[in-house]
Image (cartoon, rainbow, N blue to C red; front, side, top):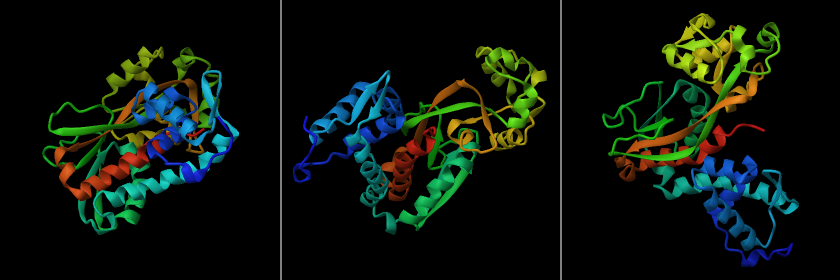
Length: 304
């Protein structure tokens, strides 16, 4: 491969560029493939095809990960800007976003509704100001067939045949607490050190206790001084220093007053967009769907 390219001869493929962008941000092909919901070989072929197309080596392998070359670093800023612009291009092509109007209801968990959807709403106001967005914040599974919502953000693929679904990424959750609480608790090196800890629980706490026990944390109902039916309340209790709470890593690690407990102990789960099949014939619903599909992978990504 040579080190210079003739931009006049380049026919740029956005799918390859997106593969490069996510691989660079995730640091490995396997993590990028999970984020994009595709197989690792397919993603690897797209990255290789982009390198061949541009005549550049974009990555070097270091251990099990990938790091950008100088050429890759230079390309990164341009491709990231393309990614931001792609949201607007995609929406404009999907039904005249600026002219679209009407009501669209999106249901998501309370924590996603309060953490992620404000950023989606802000972008929607810019690209499709005629659309009214209703956020149905609930941890219950809403029935899309009965139009309790137009689009759902779920952590499991739906089985209903009348629904369509797209996996937009993977999220990771972990345990968090305030520095003051951790100082009172003492050193935590492995799950056994949490035997004397207290946790914020949930309404259906038996399943949570069983999940913690499977992770080697020997808890009983006595370890839960507070139960919350709302995950948003759960998180605020943890932020107040009451006990250890759980949250998505993207939220927990951007909250200044919280610290992750046992960095190697986490849990991953898929994130799906779900809608009724009429999505294909409803411009306003499709606009919101495409905006979610474009923005959620980056919003969910754990900060470095």
